[in-house]
Every structure is written in structure tokens, then in C-alpha cells.
Image (cartoon, rainbow, N blue to C red):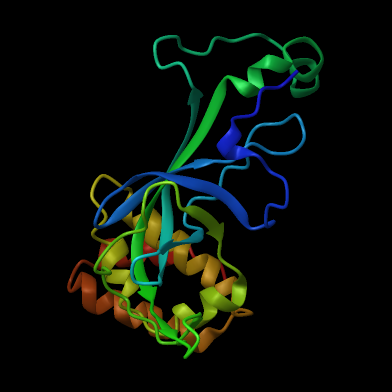
Length: 222
């Protein structure tokens, strides 16, 4: 029988609720993926995909781009070892394995969307997007959600987020920038005008580094 941690109980979980913040910093956050309902590994978000979380103090919706993900044993002392089994074989012979592993990912904060207060105190999005570091990151143990396509399209109407992605410390920034642009380009229905503007922004940010610009653009498939 698979053990489920109490804080990861999945009753009434929103389908886009994929993780929980377990470490937070000014420019990024680390999140642990929630256990799936079926006997399987947690769903690892793709490299360059968009996620969001909340700063409850301000009500700001924080947007980030996934730049690193890993699956490892919960017990940091003992490493996983090869068992020579297929995924179905693991389910049948070693079902406890799924409870002994964790999937985590890091997301670079790309910006935020503030909220306004209704007269009754409830919050609603303003629709205004700020593509710079928010006053505070999401708090620890906050839910992390996949971003829906309309949110990503709205957020990426501006291009300042590209500068942030090109400066993520310890990340393969060229590949990360290309992956983020590639996803947005596809979500925008292959909007050529948007892609051209993104390329022009990159050319300014990279100045005379033509080789890096060519490498990034070569990873974006029309």
C-alpha cells in the first residue's frame, strides 16, 4: 500500500495544482510535486514551462519558469538502485518504491500580477503584468499551479522576461530561453510577428553575440 503524506492529500485538488513550495527565495522557489492519485511517479513539469504561486501577504500572483527538475529518494542517505523492472513491474513487485521517491523542480521568478481589493475585502486580478522581481516570493507551503495558455499569452505580451531568463544563475540559460519562447510561440498559434519581436529583443539583450542568438533561435521550431 502506498503511503501518502497528510499535506499531500489529493481530495478535491484542482487539476492544475501540481506542487507545493518547500524552499523560497527572492528570485526563485523550489517546489515538490504532489503525489498522483494512481500508482505512478509524480508528474515532472517540462523544462521551460510556466508555473505560478501566490504571495498571500500582498495577493500577488507570482509567475515562474521551470529551469531544473529532479527525482530522488526521500531518504537522502540511501541512493536509488537499478531493479531491472518495467514501470508495470514496479507497480506489481515494488509498489512501495513510489512512496519512497520525490520529484522537485526549481522555477525562476519572471514577474507577477497584483490584485485589487473589492469593497468587501475579496481579491481579483488587475490584469496588469510586471515583468520584474516582486517584493516577496511565494511563501513556503504555498500551492504551485500550472499556468493556463491564456495566462501565459497575456503575461508574454511584453518581453522583459527574456532578460530574466538569460540571467538565471546555474541554469542552461540559452536552452531555457529557447524552451520558454518555443512554448509561448506554440500557444500563440505560431504568431510570426510575436516571434520576430522576441528575436529582436534577444538581439538587443545579447548585443553582438551572434553565435548565442543563432543557437537560441535554432531551437525554436516554426
